Amino acid sequence: MKKIVILFCFIHLVGCASAQSDTLDIATLELISMDNATVKYNTPYGQQYFVNGSNKPYTGYLCAYYDNGELETVQQFKDGVGNGIWINFDPDGRKESQGTYVNNKTEGPAMLFYEDGSVKAKGQYIHWKNAIGWWTFYDRQGNVVSRRRFTR
Image (cartoon, rainbow, N blue to C red):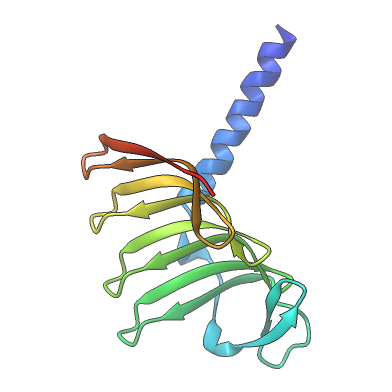
């Protein structure tokens, strides 16, 4: 019985973590424009970001905008390095894709979206947006269309 309770708690925690990243409320985030950030190159993880005028690596969310004022991207940083969630938008403000950074590399779970916001595909990336493992592709109604396995 004790093992069942522990397993249930673990499943609940994993489910909450996944749901949190799927429902990131951008309106509640303090976003700093990449126009207000300085990039230092050739650091251990490639680039490192600082808010203009600060010598402390930035922790928080950086964003970029299209010329029409719509968000182009929101990216999470810790100590100036991409670690956490990233979300890309099309010029009309619709979410196109979402995934995770690990030390400035796009790695881990990712989702692609149709224009109406429904999920187009889910899978994993490794080494800067290289698909790995099983990816599931959906139609606009959420039905599985295909599954593909990507190898390196």
